[in-house]
Image: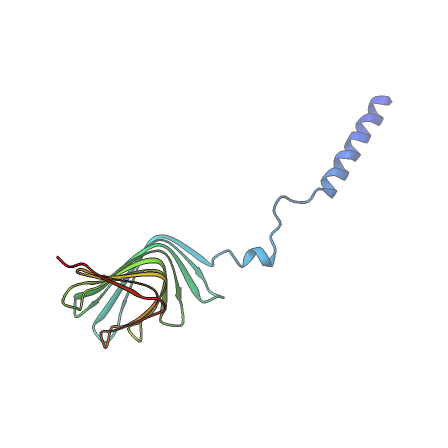
Length: 178
């Protein structure tokens, strides 16, 4: 009799413990917003348009969020070709791309523009690239180099259509003379 009472008490204790114990991970709508609708590893995205321009973006990982209308990319590289001639190459640690707009944001990026006499290189912590306007804005810790010229600053705008570079906010220019 004593054994059955002890067993009954242990079972009741176990049942109460299971009922009162919270699950380790509860899924709620707050947690769901960080789960992508689609996730891909090692992808290549290519876009062609009627202006004979080809854009290719490669990434080790891509997460697509339909509701946010965004693609988040890790370890990104890519290039733009016009009439099959390479115009621009880039690499970035991470990137965000709007599904409905033509903006590509590159974080901790290196970009090389080839349509000048000598390649023009841009390094920036943040680069917002408008593909329709063919222009980009760099912010935070920028470095622009071409041959023996180095430009340091916090903000720049570059328009590929006009080959125009605008530098603002504390720019320094260093020229190496041989």
